[in-house]
Length: 563
Image 1 (cartoon, helix red, strand yellow):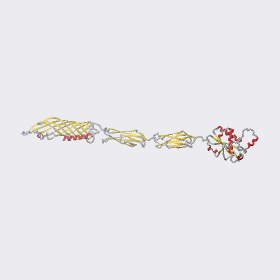
Image 2 (cartoon, one colour):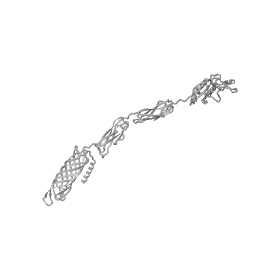
Image 3 (cartoon, helix red, strand yellow):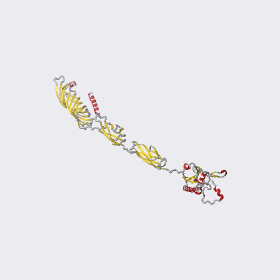
Image 4 (cartoon, helix red, strand yellow):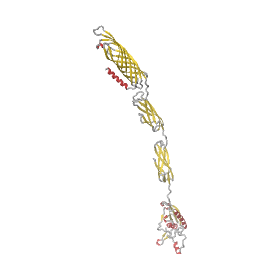
């Protein structure tokens, strides 16, 4: 039962210590002090030994070491009735020395204010015994006496543990070490005797922890990449720990005084610097080992600089299609704008030196109506998201076609002859000769001859019932045309005859160039075309050059007006 309890306690203590870790284990331990040993030899009433000794421990790591234990004891006591009660009719007293030599593993917690340990040792003991045996067999009186001396070596083993309290870096107080000591014993008294002893051992003293190195505290280093960015660009920060226990999982915690972290609990995080003012900033990280209560964390900092974005305005250009237009026709303007700083272009506006332009996007339309001939300058202004703007220009060539040809008054001929008011005289012939020359030089032009006779009394023509007033205005125009056709060879289709109102004794000659719109000619307004199938040229419409003599009987007829 005692063995089971001790073994259970030993296993529980070993389990407890196995979970403990030390940050600063020594290499060797030297212990020494007083030891008390209570021996239960069964053949005597009690056996108490006092002594001392020491132990040497070589520590493999922060938990496990190998121990060598050496103890020496001296003591003695009187014998009891055990042997008599078990068939040995003897009694007596004994004294002697006992030495133990044991080796085995030690498990110890090398940290904290209290450092428990456990051990399991095996080895041997050596005893020097001095005994007096008194035999009192019934019937024999007096009793006989016998001295027994000798040395023995036998197997023993030990299980137990204790507690060390550090006093300084290398000195520890060992107030208690309690062990169960099992010993196999044989002795030669009156007869041969062999048994097992179950012993109690107590040790107290000092333990010297030597060697080893102070624990290297955990550390951390932080980096920022890149260390200098433009406002709005990201910065990646990374924390790296050193001297943390490799089999432990660490945690990360980030803070920063500039920008926004996407992950505050990861080894690496990304800082968004959008909206951050230019300057220097710091990201701080704490790395923690949750399984280590003391000195289980480390901090570090990463510095980075945010620079203000350059405030370069947009670069603007424009193009036109087509490059040249007739006045009144449109042209399309296409704008191109880019920001050297990568800013977004948010708007366009347009203006022009002539015409009218409309549009707010990347294209606009230039209306050239009313624009004079020559280049029209178009200015495009682009604005970015930072409200920075700049302008670019392009030009559209505007051509103004010559005005459409129009009618104009070339000349006029007079009809001063009161007797023959329809006759084209020599002065009129000279004017018509000039007009004919001009028509010949411009074969695509034509003329309109407008005859006037307002307020004049028209001569009578015809005979009998057909006698009527002459259409004097029409006759003047037809006679002038007849001269041009007959004397100058002008194509009659190039001469139009009309009558007008508001004048007398005159016929206007209106020049009509090719392409002219007669309906818009001011000089032709309120005029009436002459029906040339009715109004024919007069026989004596104009003086004939070097005419032959006219017979007398024809003179009277020639004097009469003809139509």
